[in-house]
Image 1 (cartoon, rainbow, N blue to C red):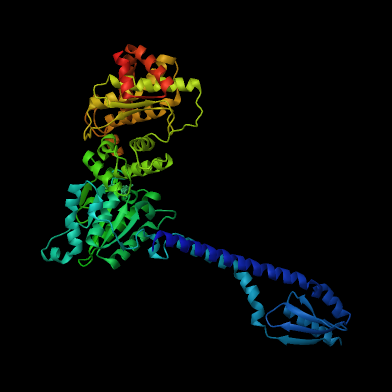
Image 2: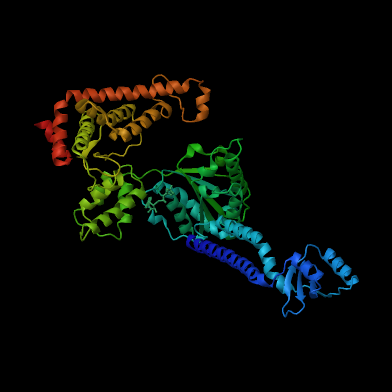
Amino acid sequence: MNKKENKKHIYIYIGLSITLIFLLILIALYLINSKNNDEEKNISYTDLIKQINEQAVEKVEMTVGSTSIKVKLKGEEESKNAIIPSTQAFIELIQTKAEEGNEINVEQKQQNIFLKIPSMLFSLLPTLMMVALFVLIYKVQGLGDKGKIYDGEGNVSNVKFEDIAGLEEEKTELIEIVDFLKEPKRFYDMGAKIPKGILLYGKPGTGKTLIAKAIAGEAGVPFISMSGSEFIEMFAGLGASRVRKLFEKARKISPCIVFIDEIDAIGSRRTSQSGAESENNQTLNQLLVEMDGFEKNETIIVLAATNRPEMLDKALLRPGRFDRQITIAPPDIKGREEILKIHSKEKKFSKDVTLKSIAEDTAGFTGAELANILNEAAIIATINKHTEIEQIDIEEAVKKVTVGLQKNSRVVSQKEKNLTAYHEAGHAIVGKFLQTGEELKEISIIPRGPAGGYTMYKTNEDKFYKSKTEMEEKLIGLLGGRAAEKLALDDISTGARNDIQVATQIAKDMVTVYGMSDTLGPISLELEENLTIFGQNIEDIIGEEIKKLIDAAYQKAQIILNKNIDKLHILANLLLKEETITKEQFEKIFID
Ligand code: ATP
């Protein structure tokens, strides 16, 4: 069952529950109303006694087990209704009256069951409402119908390895899994053990889900998937039962692939704490139990994805569980070109567009981001009424994805423009004097996304490692904007917020992750448990080290700008005039 059908069912349940509640309310209203209508046919108990004393009552009709009676008065056609406090006491009263010579005809009747139904329903109303509510929650939670919680209800995937660009080594590594799923017997006969679980590490959008689907597609087996966060939604205590149900289902359709996205949501390190933590622990324990319990004839491969491998519980990585780990890195230039090729299949491009040049401009982009850029480019080309996607549409799409949408309608005051011009000019000039700085592409003071302006660089080199010098210079470049504001305008603004945020994170990583601080040396302080090993004031030292790096970078940015203050003014003024300037225009300032 797919998500759409699940939704449809939920709506049906909600509809039915509302109808039921509505019907019960109608019945209740009817009962109240009919009671009111009967008012003129009613007689109060005091009146009844009065009438009996006055010998005006001809006949009394009583129903077994009911305190409601019918009274016929002498000379009246129709009977009246009365409620008596106690049947026993009333009968005694009538007997006394009879002894006194005031005979009243008493008729006893069995109760009519049909007449009782509305009042029974009415008294059942709260219970029925509770049941309806429970059924609704049960269904929404996906407990009742197992099929509901699955994304792909065991459908055979139609994704193939050829749909995945790049990732050649990873694909080669996974071919044996495909062979195993196709012919498990051959492997078993040979006594070979195939991993039960494979962990895919990688940034969001690098194609982890795509790979899992492609394995299923190549092997022609069903693919069922669920996200780690779905196991622990809304109500506590459901995680473990959901894991059990997922594997129950997998066993039924085996051989198959089970894909668990965001496994860190349930697979993070177990603790002994209570509450949410223990809920997490139970879910993880259940997953481990399920994976340990696979029988020989159950050919199930569990693939799980995460972008936070350091968070995972070690128990998950033990042999017989996720004992194979594959890192899915963002594509290199060749990979990016191939991904672009796959996603450009159904799009029309003008002759001036080369996928290679887009690949060059998009270092560090994931497959999902590249697919998104081509889609954005197609939308922009349509809006611009181009017959084909042109280079400028793609450039705009890259900017839209990286910096945000151009905000032409945003009203910017002259003062703000001035500030942005100095801020961006500061980044560009400082960048020019950094040895490891990236090549400038474009500077602009036209607002885009959340930014008032931007300085774009060409990152055409795929780097695996970054040196300390590079990271220090990155800090200088980032703080160049703030330094220029202070120097030229003797004031600072909120425009540097993002720069400061990024710079602080880089400095923190340098100290705690990469062991680049002179005082602390090469130790990893990423994990909280490591912090406690090094004593109580380690956090103070980390703070001091981060501050040292930031202060040094800010000072260097100021020195560069002080030396080039005339260029800073020229560039800021040019930006105010032109709004966007290219690398060539920028370089010209330094030649003149
Ligand atoms: P997340 O961690 O957010 O779930 P993911 O790593 O699982 O992300 P996918 O959902 O597999 O990423 O990728 C998203 C989309 O990006 C794919 O549907 C596909 O269009 C595109 N994509 C990613 N990598 C590749 C690739 N190597 N080749 C072709 N397309 C790719």
